[in-house]
Length: 113
Length: 113
Image (cartoon, rainbow over all chains, first blue to last red; front, side, top):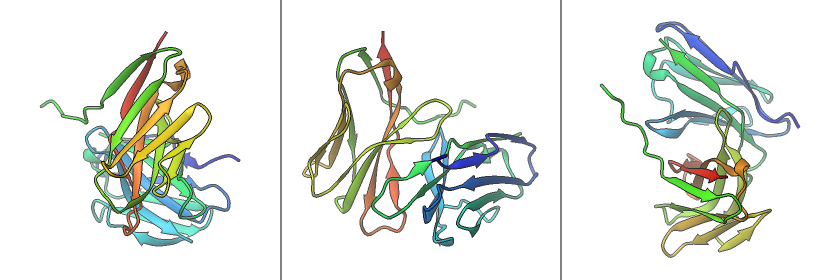
């Protein structure tokens, strides 16, 4: 089991640029979650998908953020345009059923200058 | 100006001693609780979970205790080892919420040689 795979591990970009973060969930898991972690706010849920369908995106901070899940094995989180306050570690997680724990990837550390 | 971040509670224990990490939750409707361990540069890693119909669950070197009366959760680690040094998060799930898990701010555990 390769676990949840995220890319890139680190991303440094300039304000105003588009950023795309990628996630491959564990095979067979039907729910996928995007979280953001900062020192100020801890771990925050941004959006989650069930069977590739977005269920709750109320945690997405602004219209600059968008997420897609075109198939069961791939999801993207896009920020356009990026701002310095978006700097954080972004985690993707997946699970196979509602009563099972989330399995997290190792995150993408985003720095927007 | 200086940014104000989350003030993580810290716990320092001697190698070989037992550790107890505490967590309070606020929602009496929460029905599922999880402990995660996060090492530097990695994503949160599942340790143990417990459902609200239980008050104790044991794993390998870890025990979770749930006191629903006072809405308190604790993680006990037996014979703490240097590899246990990490930030530990509790999370709970509101049975009626679509937002899934709510994470606490974490406790930094440091194991002293």
